[in-house]
Length: 347
Image (cartoon, rainbow, N blue to C red):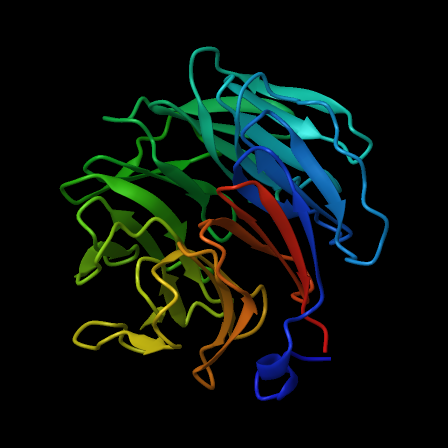
């Protein structure tokens, strides 16, 4: 089975899906490691879990787990549940049976971003000016940084974390907390960060409506400008040949194969008219990318053929999060109004 956007069915009918309405905005979503369930982080403290199978019976809503909004969510790299962070300062490990265990408690701070590393089972989170890493039951803290950490991500091998903040990026070795960090400087606030899937690049979106990318081995950097808004969402293709970005009216991808993107324009494809893309998510193994718009429209793009199709029509509620299932045949999305969407892409 494969995704083929040349199939006429994509043009005539929307794919099968499940939509569940809630009363709180959705900040994040993630599929479990085994792909059987998908969870959504809600502004009322709930983590709502649904079956990935859109025809399976819908699970009931559970009681709030956080004492405030849930701000971050990821698949548990050490189990089949999830990890969540909230504005109550707690980082939780959630079982599929509804149980919750506390990994960290940073009272008075917000846990706004989480990254996980599947091979090592490590969980990273940001809390104010500090970054936290939980691995093998041990909690280590990294910082303080010169400002609030805006995002965090693991290196390919899971041995390091990169933290975005005002003035650039700081990279820490998580195996040796006493080792001095490596700093990559660029003026301004960096609001999003993604380490490339081949481990060679770190990309950030900045407050100045552009993106910045460092080549780690050479410590060289590049700046890509021309965005009409802040780039808050970045996604590397599975083979690291493309960096997809939000904040454009069509799919936008910078080429990183060969000599990289210097002196080249980005590849852009798709049809304008749906607004600006607010969040992008690259397929876990193929050349596809999902894009959610500020109008609420959801599209699927194919960088290889430059085709795009609509998965969900606009409804005036911006898409706030996207997640692919591990197998790449289901896509989850949440929006500002509180709608939870699971799309079955098998055709």
